[in-house]
Length: 88
Image (cartoon, rainbow, N blue to C red; front, side):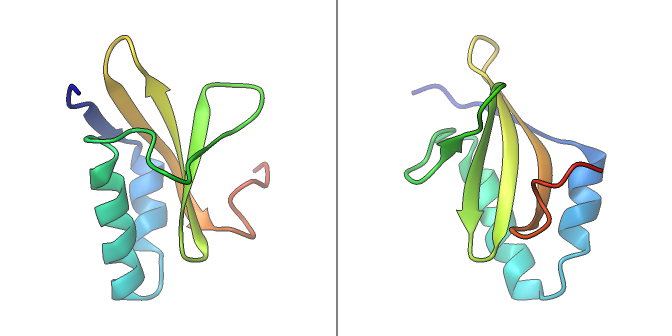
């Protein structure tokens, strides 16, 4: 399987830095890095209506977009499960 290019929106980086515990930030960062090797890991869910997916890491969610033809994974949002799906 080809390796995907991993892009992270600046807003997602900001959301990741805002997570309180260092341990949670490290776990989420590791999960994000794993998307380059396996963009659809076990447990990922396709969100309805568009080409977005989400994976879980504890109480946090990582929402990302896949572009299979270009082999690109773009992380859109990172946040607590209670807040991640709310429109801003």
